[in-house]
Amino acid sequence: MEFKEVIYECGGCGSQHDPVEVEKSPDRVVKCPWCRKRTRFEPKPVTPIANPAAAYDPFAMPTSSAPAAQAPAAPAHAAPAAPAMAAVIPGAKVANEVRQAARFFKEKQFDTAVQFAQQVLASVLDHATSLFILAYVRAFVNNPRNRDALEKFFKETLPTIEMAGDELETFKDCVMFVRPNLIRYHADIIAAVVKNDKKGGPEFVDTFSPAIIKSYTDIEWVSDEIFATFKEAGKHGSMPKTWYALYQCALENPDSPVKVGWDYEDTVKDFYDNYVLRLEDLFKDIQDETLRMKFYGGATKIKNVFISKMN
Image (cartoon, rainbow, N blue to C red):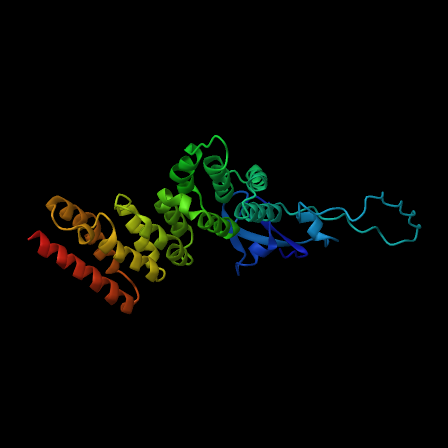
């Protein structure tokens, strides 16, 4: 982390925030990690910290265990004493704890990850990455395991949280790291990322979703909501890997009549209504003309095959 001899104060609640995060925005308007509102942060000079790493690194050790020598009394004509060392910036401290929590989570040092996540939550009650780490550890690491917290996090808590900056990036990193265990929450995860990250959402979906789509053994996962998320992400960027996975699902999913045969009329009609029509509707709105012609053309061919089989 980079440390600068300046702090920024929230124009709303007056709390301080990590200078690196604030300066990513040209106008210094960012989401405050304390009051959770987007506001302008005003610069405020501070006295440089002699050893900033020690102030922010929870693992920093003192350089010597010997007691500090008593400084001689200053003569009467001496210059005024230097101002006291500036306090640790709360926002920067939280940002460091978030990164440490995510780091230890991905290193599978779950006890340490939980400790850092709890420190974050002591300051920010609805921090997505930290809440996810605690819920995941309860669901997959603790003994006995309890998945109720993970279910509640994805279905009730996550949709209410606004994410940005380190919170958003560490959340994406952590869920990507344990993706095979989160297949049932596929729709919840990509919906949250796309809602909070218009620019980076398509890239995340195109990395996170294809393997999950390929793993499905039926189309019970299909819904208006998840296809709406795919469509929303597609407005802001291309997702060729995801689109291809969705196209292949129409041909190779075990529920597809293309894969298992056309003997059961009800099954054919159900797959056509619930998947093929959604696929064609998604592909017709692809922004890139070349990709739209490729995928929309392919979906239309599949649709025509189904129509011919149902007549």
